[in-house]
Image 1 (cartoon, rainbow, N blue to C red):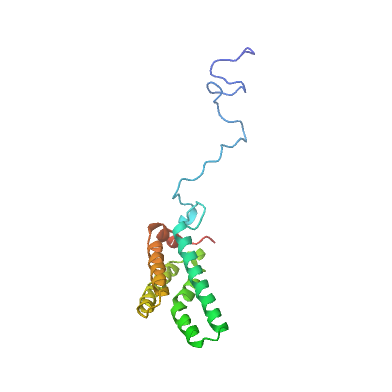
Image 2: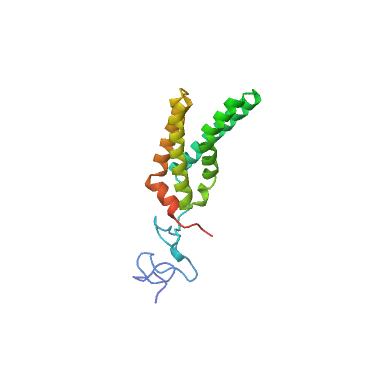
Length: 167
């Protein structure tokens, strides 16, 4: 063989056409990401697990409502209005329980989603009762409860709470 390039050989002296021969020994192919929804060993999803925006929004709404209820309760206690503090406690009770439920969202347990939807339903019922007494805060409680139910009832939320937890 001559020192010139032979047809069917690349410059590295390996077979193939136009420099596209097999990779040298020890070389690795470039990393190819798994397609969306690809399952690895044990059926676990191999994609990064980021909380969907719908679940994050519901979580933030629970945090905001629980925080506002706590702030109103503290202000009523400081002002010495025991009757107002009791009313605020009863009105904000679903928001307080929802706040605790929202802390469990990253664990992705299906029971967390169901519990949060039930708590949001209670927020709607309490909100209607509060609005019936002439307090406009009840309408806000109803609107937030409906919003949380809508957010947690979407398909992305179902997939988030339905996937297995990584070890």
